[in-house]
Amino acid sequence: MCIRDRNIAEAPLKGLHIITPKIHEDSRGYFFESFRSNFFKSNSIPTEFVQENQSFSTKGTLRGLHYQLNFPQGKLVWVAKGCVIDIAVDIRKNSPTFGRSFCITLDDKKHVRIYIPPGFAHGFFVLSDIAIFQYKCTEYYHPEDEYGINWNDKNLEIDLGDDNKTLSKKDELFPKLSEVDNNLLPQFN
Image 1 (cartoon, helix red, strand yellow):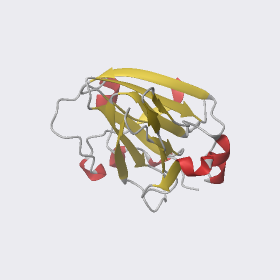
Image 2 (spheres, one colour; image 1 turned 60 degrees about the vertical axis):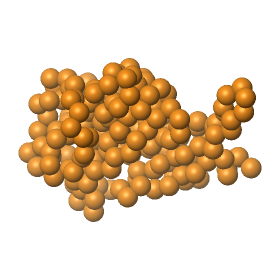
Image 3 (tube, one colour; image 1 turned 180 degrees about the horizontal axis):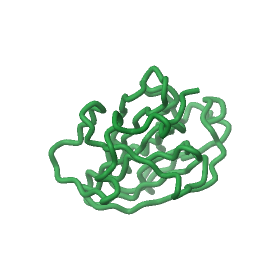
C-alpha cells in the first residue's frame, strides 16, 4: 500500500524528521510520491505550508545558518538537482539538544527530504558543480525577522571539510551561538 512506499525516521534532534521515499524505476525513468498529507499527519509532521522557495547555487556555496524568531519557520527541504550537506542546529533555549547540530547529505539520487521544525537554525553547503535546493515553509519569510549563527562555531561540530566556501557577507558576520543574546533565541516547547 502507499504507506509502505516511504519511510520516516526521527533524527537524533527532537522534531527533525528524515523522509525517504520508495523510488519506482523502470526504462522510462522513475516515480515517487514527494509529498502526501495523510502520511505526514500520521507521523506528526506539519502539512500546511504557506511558502515554497528554490535556490540555485554553485559548488562551494554555503548558505546559512538562518532562523526567524518572531515568525519561526518549519521547513521541508530537499535537493532537486545536485548534492549538498544539509545542516540543522537546535537553538531552542532549554532544549535537551540545545547547540547540537545534525548534518546529512541530500541529493537528486535518493530524494531524501528533511523536515526541520521551528526553532532550528538551517543552512546547506553545495558539494556538486551546481545544486537546485527547494523547501516548503510553515510561515512566510519576514526579512526584518532574519537572524543567524556562524556555521564555523567549533562548539557546533559541523564538519564541511577543507574545501573553499563561498558565503554572503551577511552570513560571514553571523555570531557564534554562545555570542547570541539569549532574548534572540527561540524557546523550547
